Amino acid sequence: MAPRIDRIDHLVLTVADITATIAFYRDALGMDAVVFHPSDGTTRHALRFGTHKINLHPAGAEYEPKASHPRPGSADLCFLSPTPLAEWQAHLARLGVPVEQGPVDRSGAVGSLLSIYLRDPDGNLIEISNQQ
Image 1: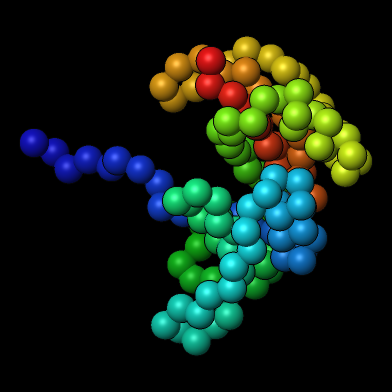
Image 2: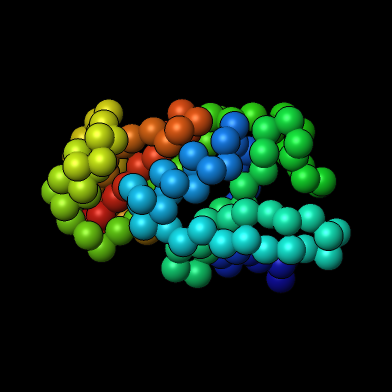
């Protein structure tokens, strides 16, 4: 039997401004900002939500190893939420974060989704979805 992958532990976003990115994901999406110190002695920043983590790399000073062509604004991320999208829309409107599209029906990894789309400070496409 071939080896299998069963989940994601973390992913990396290359960002233009770590402070702005942390503020957006913390305030708009409810993620927790964390600072960690890997064995190489650097101080790094990440966003934690549930059992997942997004590591943040500063554009132009990415940590090794890194993607072949790291750049801000190249990601398209979908986050699942139990909070109804109407509540998300009201929350984002209060923060002045525009919803670009939705709610729209989409197909997720394990079934149907109802989704809205917005952008983070680097222009990454963010999809917030409810499973249907």
